[in-house]
Image (cartoon, rainbow, N blue to C red; front, side, top):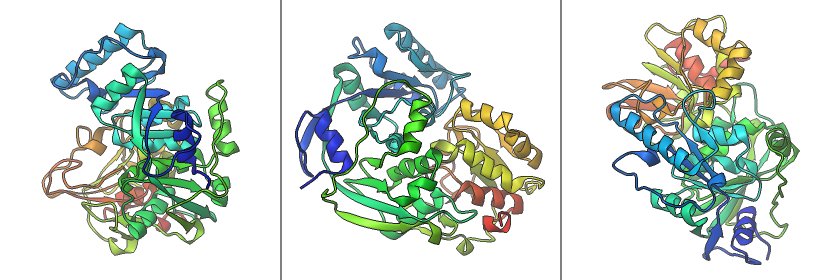
Length: 417
């Protein structure tokens, strides 16, 4: 019997000829990403040794710039850590700032066949690059950074074969909501994405799916490699790399078909992502107080361009706060050069710097008592973006932008014919 992509990489990283579901494997780690939440004073434990400082990336993203005194102390500890070990891949507030998962993509820190860990739950985002990436506990990040290894239990794999092309006004966020609504959680399972549709999907579109796979409770999420992926990496790094494909006789828990051409705009209703999505018509007309486009899932240049296309020449409803947060300053600069920022601002959007910000309910978009928000971010859990009484609907950037214009949840096809 052959192996899936995840099994092949785990076998390579554990120096074994073959691994199977249920195996416990100790694996070498290629990249360790520290985010600012690792350096909170009450949590931080001083490290005296790093296995390979050149393999460490430090990103200040969750509270950036800092909104309070604790955040300031946290960032000071991070900067001292960077100086202590001479870490070169440091993304402080400023030019190189961004949400860690977008920073990883912008700089091609995740190579095919490599293994990357970080304490942030959406680390699986890097699976778009045929890389095994996973969010792990803070102690596991310390362990990987100091000893260069970690361990996993090999899970079964579900493969999604994607075909067709996305219709106008439908995005890969809608594809995720379809999978989450139809199949529910994927606990203790890996997810593998491939199929003929890849020829029509950008890296940013694919990254939405790997990022959101965390919300399926998947262990690892990974894409088949192709030339589009390879070109993205080669444009950003000169390192040699090896792509990993599933064996033709790989054993899967299930193989499921997704026809992108048959999808429609969807929304997840408040408090849960899985088994909670419906066509946008089911929520249409719901009055909103805030609309948010951003996060590691949907803060790319393509996402901002799509939102700008919806609002171009229009004005945001006077009772709605439309907040747009690019996933990195590199995305912000590209959007500015393309006129996207101006289009959004002219419509009444508030465009912030790159940060996790409103997505995690820390700053720049915290919800008040009984408010309603539609977001393109990663989670719609109760209390996620502020008050526990607030309701959070989830949709694509197109759906969010259309809703901001109308002041109620709106089908984006009204604006994107």
